[in-house]
Figure 1 (cartoon, one colour):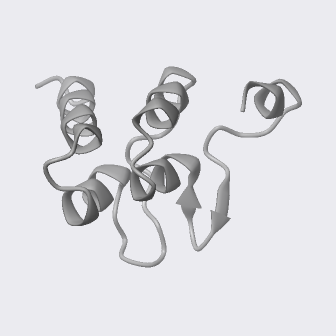
Figure 2: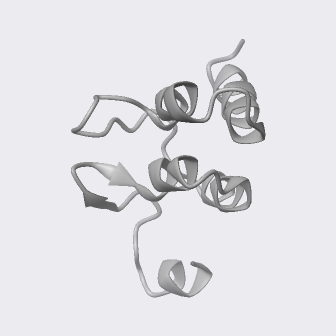
Length: 82
């Protein structure tokens, strides 16, 4: 991922129907990837074109009770000033 970023790829690039790397990390429950993407500026509020959900919305729907949901909830809360 770092190599792609160094070559100019966007950390928020959408692969299909607005699904960003962060959305896909949530779907695959890859907390390590989600953390890396967020540390490199991934947009927490990006919405897909399938369900109009943010990565946290996907976590709440398909990864409820997992570490990735907890992480995204905490990061989103901190980002909103809560």
